[in-house]
Image 1 (cartoon, rainbow, N blue to C red):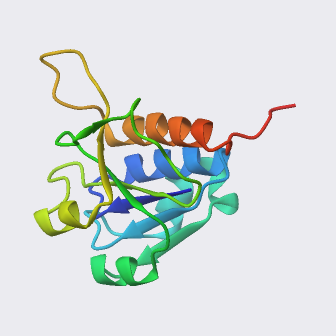
Image 2 (image 1 turned 120 degrees about the horizontal axis):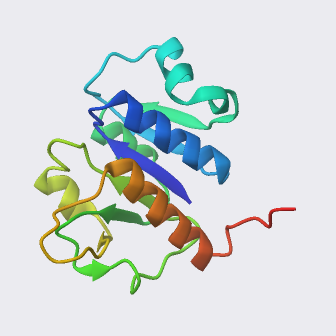
Length: 151
């Protein structure tokens, strides 16, 4: 399982997602350009003391990411055709989350093997991307036995 962030806008969300992914032993792919200047110092601050253990790969753009990608591409989107609780995950899936301001463009949406939505109460549009990533990661790891036992 991997998490991929498509052109993220907010450094704090990236740090939160990296921290969450690191706690669950999950690598993170960052697809540039990002909406903030990347600096190792700012990243370490946003990811707290988890940055040293994080598995983060930066990709220059969508094409570079897609060329390096292995496994199914599972897009988290409010336009998803499949409800999260009905989705069936595989251990090598890549969970893709769009930018906070624009999501993903149509060509990226079309490249997804599965478009999944997290069900919300009527009248509510979306969750914060870091919250969505945590929910989807936990469910995908639960299904694939990727959750490690906590002593």
